[in-house]
Image 1 (cartoon, one colour):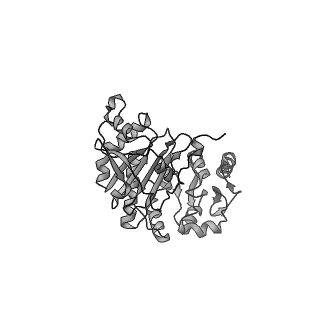
Image 2 (tube, one colour; image 1 turned 90 degrees about the horizontal axis):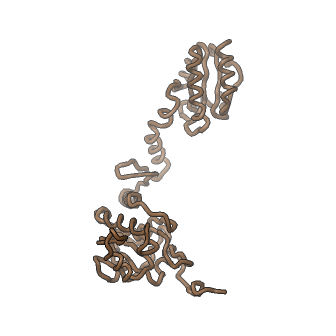
Image 3 (tube, rainbow, N blue to C red; image 1 turned 90 degrees about the vertical axis):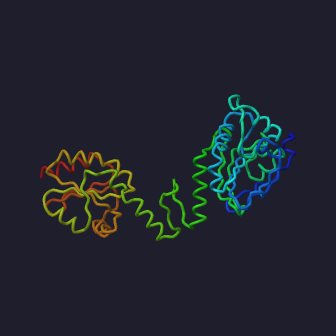
Length: 324
């Protein structure tokens, strides 16, 4: 048996990143008065349109108040905030006139759109049909009217004003400078050129104090093939082949450092198999699995290679090297 809701035909979702934002004209409450608002009114500015489920609820006022209270920060970035729900404009106005201490919004610095036909929410792909309310969708629209960013949260999950502001700043930076913004980028952080050479430059600088400084600091690093030959030419030496991305290499490092303390007569060194000066050396040694432990005495390899996270085998091999 069909329901009344099933008989209503809503527009198909039209909102896509890079595509024109669906235009709209609808009643809204702005500066404490009911008026009409159109998306086209703000052409030439960035627009952040964010939907919320219902007036006079719980999470919703925390979001709307948080955005409204920081509206000036967005205005300085040439951005207009617009809130929207499927409630009526009269309901919006009553909510605004309710003091915050009683669950109301109080004075608002941003327009609140009344999408009573639910067509706007449907076109933006946030309408929860069975409930007739909007999910927490947020859209960043550029001055040309194209969508740059979309997020949609479930009903009970509020959004972050800080993250929205950061994303807007990233969108604007890319538009102005043509560079791309990596994860967690903030104004003043390093960006990268959108090509292979530019990305390598970014990764090299970003990893200048990378994994080597974060783990295994007690173990000497081999810097070159000559360094390797010099280190292994005298005495008893354990050489660990590793890579910064290797999880097992990280996991076994505390144990390797412990072995180093237990065997002062054995020298422990590590070899980054991904470092450009050491790639040929790693290949010549036939290192295929990580971590790889090789054992040397007076320049000659001794014993069997130990690979992987095998503490017992490694401990036995080091004991054997130390005692021979």
